[in-house]
Image 1 (spheres, rainbow, N blue to C red):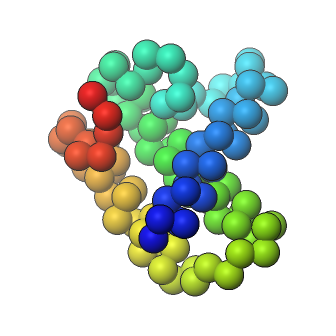
Image 2: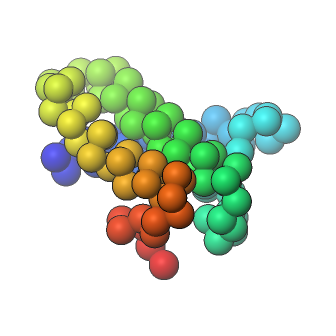
Image 3: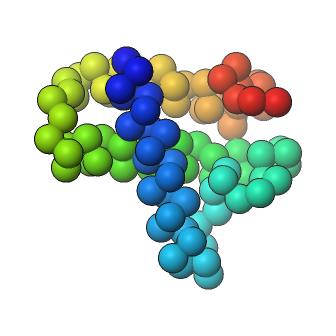
Length: 100
């Protein structure tokens, strides 16, 4: 599980790096300074989108590095994490994993 979470966090780095290369892109994500403090629906949906992208990029990185990871276990871990962000986006519930 720790390996999968690490891949996810590396996925965030890859998302950030891609955005730094295209600063005028329409993509809005949670790694933009101060964005998590806002609670508009647009921002909350952007955070969910970035989380999904970070998981996908993390998976692809693991595959590219030749890591032997069960897709089923990875998806289970991903779904558990995404569920908390979906609850926050839909009903405004505070994400239990987010830092204050």
